[in-house]
Length: 208
Image (cartoon, rainbow, N blue to C red; front, top):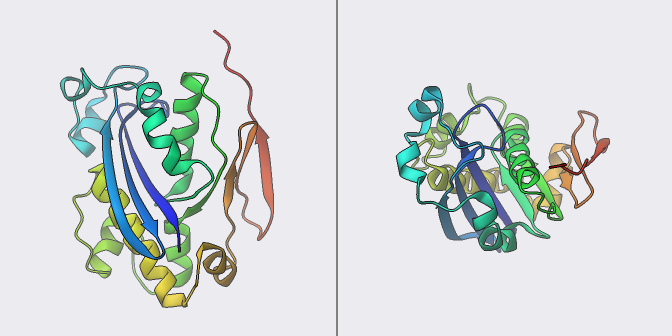
């Protein structure tokens, strides 16, 4: 099983305002590497409610690179990969909006939602948030630290695969009757409810 788990934290209510990203790389069913980057957000302001969630402030990222500045470093972990996030609708939208903010081309990737999968695989668990599932599976978590969240997401995904005896991501999706979302340079397809049904949204270039 091969995939990259990701987690974004944002500075404000704008989806483009990524201020932190964590990545956890899984190769052949083993968590091999985690990475973390602070990001100078776009637009560059912080809402207090966001600070209360993740503890990152304007001062912490004043000297950090923008998303455009770190993109070359993280793109190889995403391009032509399967990406996993806990509540993937949020994290993939942050990725798209951050790329849109700098007119950067979308990568080609597929993505899965560990939250959606957990609801299918372990419906008996009272809550399926990252914190609750980490407790359920005895995974150490520093919640809302992006690197720790990405690591927990990766380990949860591996646990779900183990429970279902899935050999890879595609097998896990098949067994749970879920589907992969898609991002391509010209468009993206979010989860659409019905099994194997996708709705493609075509990207409109940002004008300056």
